[in-house]
Structure formats: structure tokens, C-alpha cells
Image (cartoon, rainbow, N blue to C red; front, side, top):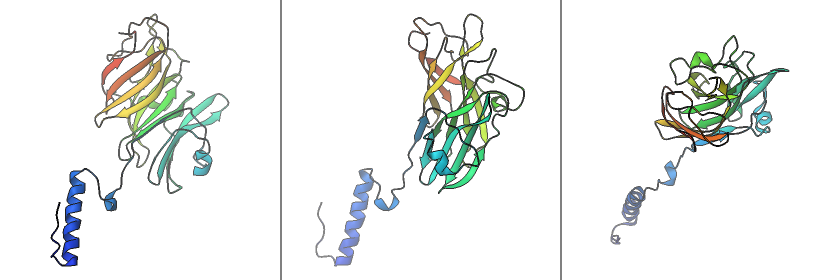
Amino acid sequence: MSYNHKLPKNLAFLSLSVILGADLAIAGIAPLAVAQTTTVQSSIGSAVTFTCNDSEATIKAKNGPKVTNGSTTIYIGYQQVSSSNKDPRIVRFDNGIKRWCRSDYETTGDDGSGYGLFWDGGSVLYGVFSSTGSQTGNDFRRFAYGRWLTSYGSGGGPKVAIIARIDPSNGNVNYATFLTAKKPNDGKTNSLLVTGLSWNGANLTVRATSWWTPRRTNTSAMNCSGSSPYQYTAVFTGDLTKMNSASAPTCS
């Protein structure tokens, strides 16, 4: 690349800036002045306890699942509301100031908690929650109407997962689906633990550990060989109405 050294210094500098800017664009490198990037984050882990009255410092010290973009961090966990009952909690802080905290997703006797988050830094936020059965009152069933799996199912005790699409601006649940295993002998619900989430802009991929037996896309129980648990992968449409694919080694 050559430059015209006979140009006045100010014009030569302008020409050089334009050329360098074009080269940066061609190379796919953003100029530093506009290098504001968003990091997609997924955080799945052991649930921790906190209340909506706790400070960010208190919640952060628990080292529970959280996702951060810039000065904003969202935390998920639970509050021990009685000796035998936990309820989910999720809270957002901006620059250390609480923007919202939600304690109303599930307020029944179900021993539930929150243990996972996925956030693209923009409008796509998913939360992962646990449930041990259906009881009278407000729970995630009211968000799951019309979605892939609308309830915990029959039985109670085994811990299953709920995946919820959440509005990061206010914490509202847009919709949710239950994700459970199914015992092939009696049709009762069995345990499932989500271990990872990923997003491609249209579909949500869920990785999970499923006990006997994972479900097919039509919610029926798979046929499996070998010992339980199984490493299970399910791909949902972003609105959680449909499971596009489901797989687990030694299962069909």
C-alpha cells in the first residue's frame, strides 16, 4: 500500500485514517472507539440461598450461578421459607443497585430452587429451576400452558427441571416448560438435572443428566440399555413449544 507524500500533513493523516479504517473493516476488526462487545454467558451450578433484601455483596459471596454483562449481574437461587420448603429467587443488580427481585414464580409447598442461567446480554434470558412435585397454588404450570411439557406429571419426590424464558428488564416469565424423565414401568416422573444451556439465535440446546428414562421429542419414554443416569441432549425452539431433537447414548 502506498501513500501520496506530497499531500499536506492534515490531508495525508485523513487519508491514512480512512484507509486504515477500511482495512480494519475488511479484516473484521472493529475500531477501538466502538469496541463494545457482549459476552454470551451460561452458568449452571449448585443452588445457593438468598433473599430479596440481601445486598449484591452478600449474594455474590455465595458463589452461586450468575451471569454478567457490563455493570449488570443477574443471580439465581432460592430462599428457605420453612424447614421443609424452598422457593426460587432471581435478582438483577445494575452498578450494585437492585433493579428487580422476583419471589413469586413458585410459592407452593413444592421444594423448588433456581440453579442455572443463560443470557446473551440482550433480550434472551433463560432460567433453570427445580421442582419436586405439583401442589396447590402458584407455580410454573401457569407459565407452561401450550409449551412442550406443561407440568411435573404424576408422582412426586424426584427432582426435575423447569426452563423459563425471562424478560431481563423486569424478571417477568414469558413462558416455561417442564423437563423431566419418565419411568417406563408406571409412567411416573423421574429425576432430571440440567447441566448446560446454549443458544444459536433460534434454538435452545439443553444438556442434562436424566435418570431412567429420558423422553423423546413427543414426550414418551425412550428405550434405553445400560445403567442410569444417561447424558441427555434436547434441542428446543426458542419459545419452548417444541422439542426438535432428543438423544442419549444407548437410548432410542
